[in-house]
Image (cartoon, rainbow, N blue to C red; front, side, top):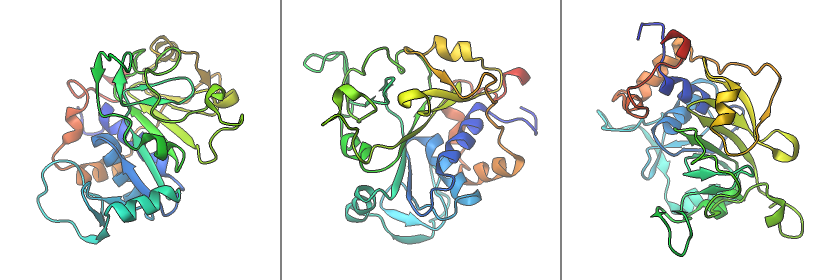
Length: 265
């Protein structure tokens, strides 16, 4: 890649950072290398009030990227279970998570593939997804946008509440339900369509809406007839990304570390 180009991973990182724009003082949790770097990019650029951790047990003054550390970060305070859950249950957290499946309602699955009694594959279990989904804002990252991830019907096991009226209690969605964005290797989406329908709000350079729809198991809405192109990371953002991720872990997420702009590939 030339000096002025950027990778798909860097494009995705910049798109991930945007989920925390104007969030104020919240705990920013990015699950996986690209969401984690994205949280750091947001903190160092346009959302300095968000709180980031070292991925273990400390809040840090500056974001800590994935991989081996060359030096110890400056710690601001402990991020033990008590403090994390105090932020979580009060809504002062925005998590960017990476489930295995999601459906048209935003219901997400990290537990099993197939029937729960005899699954084809068993994964993490529901863990904190049920409570997280009704306590604070959540966004999603999928490295492979396909129909195995964006499933027809419901996900195989509902771990996270979504905008599914059939599952509402008393006919109303959970009070704290707030699903925001979905970032994939093809596009950026949100839940801003009719009745919270998932809609495409930007297409990565060189990607068409038809390609996104063909890889999705349910109908998608559009933000406009002419869908905007996902903004490329700026030179300043690329410098910050390199600072946060000196180990270049970002280059290992997508096979062969492709260019962010297919048209330039």
